[in-house]
Image (cartoon, rainbow, N blue to C red; front, side, top):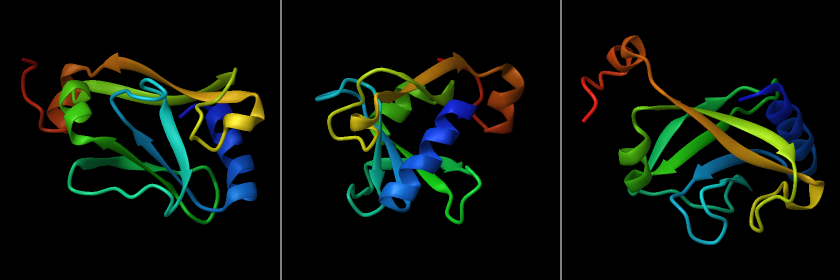
Amino acid sequence: MTDAAAALLRDLTAQHGPLMFHQSGGCCDGSAPMCYPVGMFLTGPADVKLGELDVGLDDPIEVFISLAQFEYWKYTHITIDAVPGRGAGFSVEGPTGKRFIIRSRMLSEAEMQYFGLGQRA
């Protein structure tokens, strides 16, 4: 995550309590990362936990992606950023005048080896 995303997440956590992200493959708000209070979006067997974000609070912010979307993005380094603009309709940053976005790049060969991904298809 970027410093801007971490700052926004600290502000939103103070307002909403512990948060989590889910990156879907589209629908209502396209491919925007959606940020929810923990418990407001339930993950299941069709979701993959990508990791946790440490923004300097008591609880890390878990990041999930749909399994189908993970298959497309598994060779991608994902960075969550926050920029000026209207947030996604269901995501907690909606009223703030800022929105979360994904910045991405292909994984390097060394990163692919680290994650056990082998060769790109």
